[in-house]
Length: 141
Length: 128
Image (tube, rainbow over all chains, first blue to last red):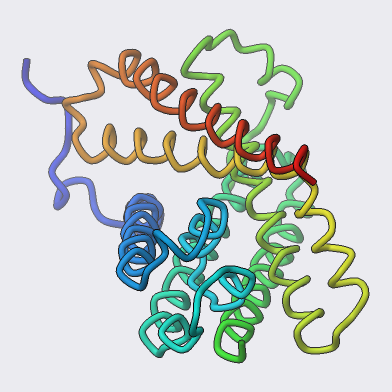
């Protein structure tokens, strides 16, 4: 069967197509950073120093506060520049992925045009501020 | 968007899409829950770290609750696995043929992982 698809040059690569791709790519990026965090934690001795719940907490966000209440002997390797950078990248991808997700839901169910515009701006402001606060907390803890 | 919307949310929910539609709803609900939880969590961390505020401690006490943990872990795990399925099917469109099998396989992975996590959460809660 002949595929019923258009090539990229015929279809055009507009903003919506870009965001559609970005949502998929950012999901894969979050999988990547979660894997890096798990492997890094195991290399730093997580197998004997903490339980599964703490490992998962670290996996979702590489913040040294997340391993504060474990048997980790020294927090220094857990709060290096590398973990701050991967954590900030995770915050960036999570916030932009979540922002696009909430905006899709608003677009789908908000029938009123004015409310839709208001919520769009509101959600963008809230999530950008939250991402900034998240990265700030990450770099100061 | 200049689209006319003449289907209400209640009508949309009457659509009998069965399995694929269930994952669609769960993906939306879990996604919104994660945004809400992560937003509050970041706010709580910020407030308790910078100002030692009691509001920050209050937010922390919500997500330390085991019932909330069971809910939010459902959201996180389902959203991650279902998202991975969507990414794979979207980036390799030929696999769309097998989308129903993909959903069955997704539940096959999700249920044991989630059951184990719920077991650990409840055991920890009972241990106090």
